[in-house]
Length: 252
Image (cartoon, rainbow, N blue to C red; front, side):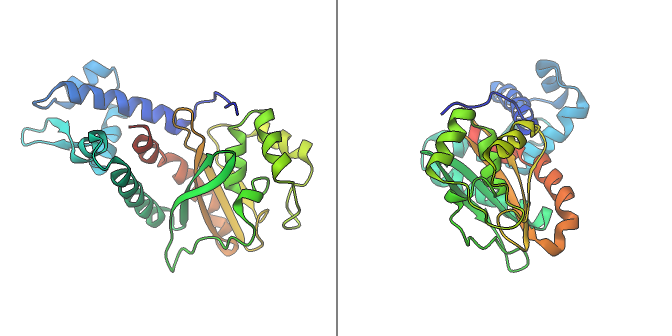
């Protein structure tokens, strides 16, 4: 399986965040935002919201003199002690907050051993998760999650997947022509959310954005009832903007 080497907006945000964290880690006694700006070369317009995000996620903390130091979340994730449990808890906390922010059920999906897999999700009575009426592994051609993962594979990777999971019409809006599907996947901008407008299930609309970390293929997605479709694009854009904390957790 080969990946398409196209960076996304969240990926660039994570690169900046890692640069900031490396700078703060070098100053064990704390470091001011002015010093961080000088050492990273990031202007205040980018650094200020980045520091706010890192504080909110617990990766940095602000000490009494206003300087920044490494936070508990970063120490725990980097310790190697129960790291997987700490990572899952951190991701779930972020997903819960994201669910409430965008007003929709949200999901993390990974492409593992040639299969689509939902690894974590956050829903609620007001934001129910999508009914998996067809196994997600067999519906990559129709779901936002599946299409987002397929965009990150090369042509051979896509054909391999579809050779094992044949394209089927799930609704009247499902694309069932492989050539048309691949053309749409190729035309999908890397920084624009992938949409599912009732292609997987009647009554549900979805969106997904890539969260590729290293050699892994993944995405962050949301779903909502079709009666809320007027909110989909705004929610999808918010999802894209807020993907950085999740990708950062997966990268550390």
